[in-house]
Amino acid sequence: MSPLAARSLVFFASASVLVLEILAGRMMAPYVGVTLESFTGIIGTVLAGIAVGSWLGGRLADHYPPRRILPIVLIAGGVLAVLTYPIVSVVGPSSSASPVDIVVLAAVSFFAPAAILSAVTPTVTKIRLQTLNETGAVVGRLSAIATAGALFGTFVTGFVLVAAWPSRTITFIVGATLIIAGLLTAVRLGSATTAMLVSSLGLAAVATGAAVAAPSTCEYETAYYCANVDVDPDRGSGRILWLDTLRHSYVDLEDPTYLEFRYAKIFGAVLDTQLPTGPANSLSIGGGGFTFPRYVAEIRPGGLNTVLELDPAIVDIAAEELGLDSASLDIRTGDARVTLRETPDGNYNVVIGDAFGGPAVPWHLTTQEFAEEFASKLTPDGFYVLNLIDYPPLGFARAQTATLAAVFDHVAVIAPADYIAGDRGGNFVLVASRKPLDFASLTVALANRDSTATIISGAEVLEFMSDAEILTDDFAPVDQLITS
Image (cartoon, rainbow, N blue to C red; front, side, top):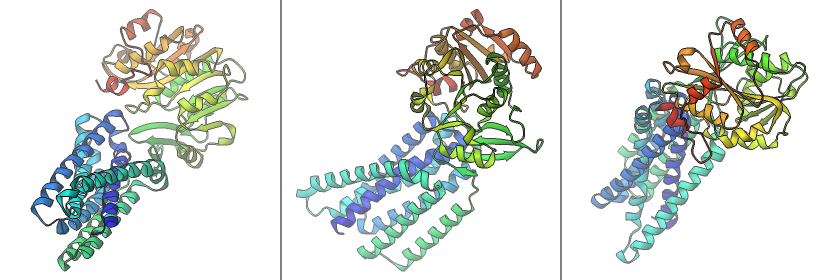
C-alpha cells in the first residue's frame, strides 16, 4: 500500500467518525432534544467506540493478515454509517430525554460505526510498518493524520454539510464512499474475492433500502432543528410549529391576536396591560412562529418590532407556512447574545423571551450578564416577559427568578398555583421590571382569558426562589437544574 493511499484512508475514516458524531446530535434531537445531556451522551459513546475500535483493530491486525482485514473494516463501516439514520428512526420514538435513554440511543446507533472505523488506523499502521526501526515515525505520522481527519470532519460537517444536505443524505454519501473505498482497497491489495464483492454489494443494497424506507420525522431539517408544521384540525386557519420534540408556536393565519397556548395567553395579558398606549417597540429573543412580534404589531401598531432568531431557515418556514410578512419586522438572524449588541439602547418597551424549548435551553441566555445586557435595551418603564418550562423541584425556575431579581427591582411569577407550590410543573411566565407592575389590570386580563394562573410578587417571590443560586456566565448548570 502506497503512503498516499494509507494516509488517505486513515484521514477519511477518522473524518467519517466525526461526521457521524455531529450528525448524531441532529438525528437524535427529534426524540431526546438538544441539551448538554444529549451531547454528553453522544460524545461519550463515540469516544468509547473510538477506544474500543482502536484496541480491537490493533488486536485483529496482529492476529490476522491486515491486508484482508482492512477492506472488510471499510465496507462494514460504510454499511453501518448508512444504517445510522434508519436505526435512530426506529429506536428513537421509544426514547426519552433521560440520560440513560440518550446513552442507549447513541450506543445502538453510533457506537458500532465509530468502533469499526476507528479500527482503520491501527490496521493501516500494521500494513505500513516495514521494520521496527520506523515504528515511531509510522505510528506518529498516521496518528497525526487521523487527528487531522477528525478535525476536518468536525469543521466541514458543522460549517458546511449540515447546512447543505439532510442528515440522511450525508450519511448515505459517507457510507457509499467508505464502501467504494473498501472495494477499491481490496482490489489494490489483492484480497478481493467474488464472495466479498457480492456480499458487499448485497449489504450496501440492504442498508440503502433501509435508509430510504426509514420514515422521516422532519418536514424541514434545518441546521439547528427538525421542524414540522401541522394544521390545527379544529381551526382551519391555525398552524402549529414543532421544533424537535416541542410544540413550539401556534399561529392563526387570519387573526394575529389569537393565542392558543396557555403561556401565550398569559403573555397576551401581560402585553395588553403593561405596554404603554399607542405605538410600542418590542424586542423578541427567539422568533419561532413569530406569534408575539405579530401580536404586538397588531395591538400597538406603528412601533419597531425587532426579532432575534437563531436559525435563518425558521424565518423562511414562517414566511412560507405561517403567513409571516418579514418586511414588517426587523429580523436579525444569529445567536441572540451576539445580535443583541447591534440593537439600540433604551429603545424597547418590552423584551420578550421565547427562546427556551423545554429541556433545550441555551444556558447563555439565562445568566445575570445577559439580563444586564437586555435590560440596557429597555426604556425606563420597559419590562421583560419570559416563558420557561420546569418541573419539580423547580431548580431552573427558581434560579432564573433569582437571576432576574438580581437585575430588576420588581419580579413576578405567573403560573398555576400547584406549579408554584412545586407539586407539578410546566410553563412558568416571569415578568421583570424596574418599575412596579400593574397587577390589578393584569389579574383582570388573565381572568378574561380564562386563565387559572396565579400571580406572585414581592415576599412571595422571595419565598419561591428561596436560596436559589444566581445564574452567571461562569456558572449556569441549567440542564442539570431542569432534570434534577
